[in-house]
Length: 413
Image (cartoon, rainbow, N blue to C red; front, side, top):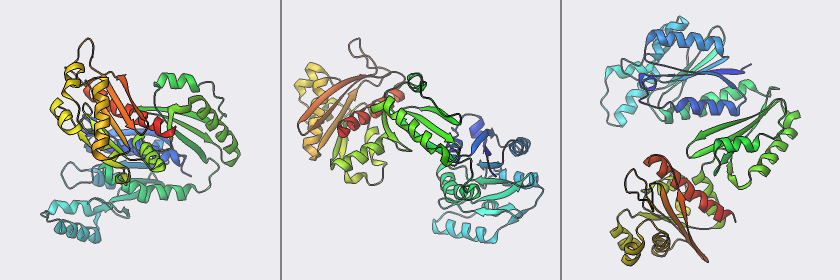
């Protein structure tokens, strides 16, 4: 039975800090939902000896190994070759995969080179894992006698498709109705620091096999409850969830793997409302977040990034007198921006954001991080001032999250 897993990620770009390893986080999250504990996450560069060490160490620590990276056609893509060496098998060319690769390259008008055949080589006896969105298939073999090793593409989008399409269903089938079944619930939090969240939930009496975990990934904060033990623990799990909801209240903006923009989209659909955005300091980020959700055209009318004062005047109808008297970062300007975008698009709700993202442009009256926001809708038109801290990117991210959260609270009332 599979209880513990080891996650491997390979590539010099990971060990030198040039690229952030997001694959491991995605894999760990999926394993958690199945009740599989992650014993270790190992990252190694494109070096034969380090790869062999990682395979050996992973075989000692886990019942299952899931790796990603190093399946490309270049000289530094060593994973398949080193896995074959580790398990003492030859590399065999899969003619079907080779033909599929050639066809795919021809269809896209990409020149075919011999080194691309490297992606059709697999350890003898391996089961091939299809890659529905990329060129490099993955594979499954057994190591250390009977421990399954899955190896997937290192490209995040491809890895996720392979993980969800093949690996997770396989693990779920293997675990079946194991008595170590886990009940889990994720709460997405806004408006609390990690330390404050910890202090609020600390008094909750958890069952002996229950656990609360925290993840801060700005601008998100996630609280996760997990209770092991099968059906007999279901009542305790439900009681803990209710306790968390009672303590955190409106700080919970969603439950499950839901982003703030997804939650706002759900509410706009439920309320049959439409939205338009007027952004200055956020530079279109809020629009980007809204429109990354499939189906957002049902509730999002559009927006304007009005960075210069002239753009605020020409596109939103902000009066020159308002800008001259109060400045771009002010309550009156934010109010006129939200009303202007609402009137010009015909949306039910107009949301505006204008602020000082820095690192320059601040003043004693309006320091860097000062942001004004406004929401205009039928029977309601108001503005709020916010203060964010950090570098430019963090201020912009924080402002986008705050704006969406404010809209969420209005839609929930």
